[in-house]
Image 1 (cartoon, rainbow, N blue to C red):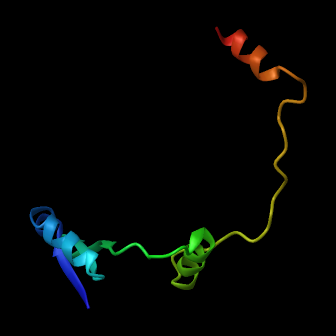
Image 2: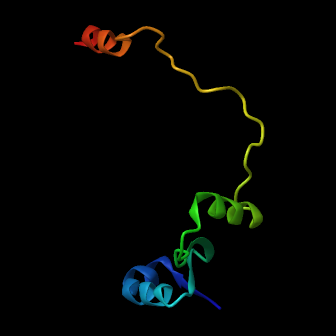
Length: 90
């Protein structure tokens, strides 16, 4: 069950909201009658970034770009380029 609070109520009852979240509930926040946010417990365990990204993809909140555009390489090709650049800026 999802409990809903207006922004005013959520601010006034923040301790209550956190208590419910700690118990595993999800809380939705509305602004002028429109849902604008959801507060929920952080998943326990060692799920890692990939698991969380997968959950977001499955829920339709995230669409990852599958094509790798290029490779990451060094921009400075000579030794000390960063030092010289920083000295020039002073």
